[in-house]
Amino acid sequence: MNYRTIQVQKITTFTGHRDCVYTLEKSDREEVFFSAAGDGMVVAWNLENSGNGELIAQVPASVYALRYVPEKNWLLVGHNHNSLQIIDIANKEVLAAVPLPPVAIFDIVWSGKTQFIYVGLGDGGLAVIDANSFTLKKIIKLSQKSARCLALNELTQELAVGFSDHSIRVLDATSLILKFELSGHTNSVFTVAYSPDGRFLLSGSRDAHLKVWLATAEYTEHTSIIAHMYAINHITYSPNGKFFATCSMDKSIKVWDAEAFRLLKVIDKVRHAGHGTSVNKLLWSGYRNQLVSGSDDRTISVWDLNFSLTYEDYTVRD
Image (cartoon, rainbow, N blue to C red):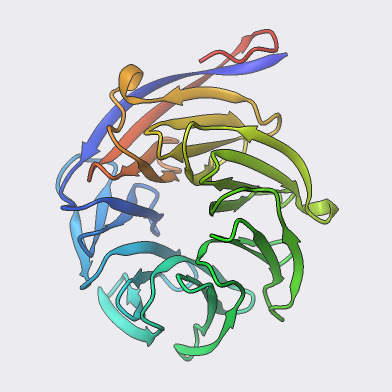
């Protein structure tokens, strides 16, 4: 079979955050991305240079979640204080701060079809915010444990929510009716991601397993892989959808074939001068296909991935 080998080179390291980097998010420009951390700072960085970042916002609590809204050029900032901030990037101003319960905000997604902002809360609630009026429509209590991660299937308008009760619940994004409840993980679900074509839902958990669910077949389990040594913190797809990457509390990043679900590359401290502590978030940029990672070590690393075709047997070598 034909597999791809990957040459990895660290391009640069961005420093400046004074606490763990928890989240990364795209912007309206491929070369610019946002980060947020335990220090409450939201910063814009430019992949075209290794200079200092630009402070976009400073909030009084840790920021676990950011979401860029391309249709409106907004940045949604979820901070652990009691509100969701909506920032107009072009004018660099806060348009609104939507009051929420005083619990952690773990993830945010946006639907252009429903014009809703969905927020995963630390008390197991899913907050639904009307983006046109900046008002909280409702909070649906789905679990007694935290709603840790969200993913929206743009094709079917299904919203997947991963919980610390080990389950994943799939809702209709418009009616918010529960459609499916997925069990299989044995610990908190920290990340969910739909494949770009909508066929698969990928999930990663504190149990270190990567699970693949067939979204087109009522979410039957397609495969389960012991992907890391410790918790899987995040999953992201490449811009062309042919690959995805996972990152973990085990300090490593892994790159996978998105069709065969085969491991192609391990990026770590020993082989590639990777992070020395937990890798919390990934962003696979369209700018030169660069992969960006944020860590508990307070740094952001930028990786150049050079793919080449080769012929190998069924063992995928790192």
